[in-house]
Image (tube, rainbow, N blue to C red; front, side, top):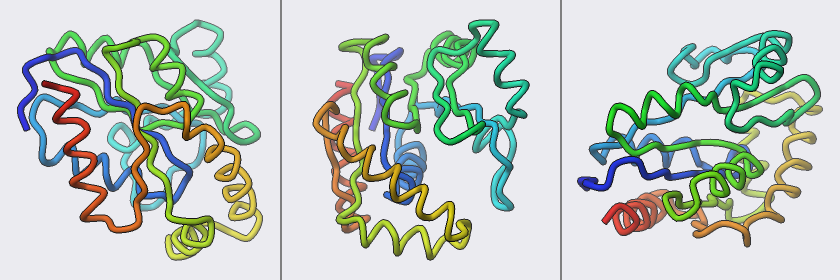
Length: 191
């Protein structure tokens, strides 16, 4: 898939464990002219994550300083003292490079980005087939304790209530089908 219309914005959002990051990585691997906007967060880095590639990791205090300096295009306190956001400088860097931007962010951040970019943005909500499937995926990750699992499921139920505010909803029941669906949506949007 080639994109000739640079400067467009593709926003993915989903409850944790729905497969959003897998689909984003697939899209980035199969499409030219796209670049991921690396989000900033204030949580601990996981074993398999790389600073600057998966997220830019800051302390909660450093994150708050950037909020005060108005450096974020969007940000949310997703859990207590666990902030996620998009730096304006990251968006400007990608736009100035002539690429289209892909976001992998929470639902409220996605809606803020859509409001900012209007018709130059498409929002795609990745939906798990069920809460039970989501619970199973989160368990299989091995990154959650019981408390954080309950917190993520409660958050997921809240996030699912936003799906009708997105341009497209892709149910990730069969990964191969979801990949094709995402490719089709983005390909059509970039034409």
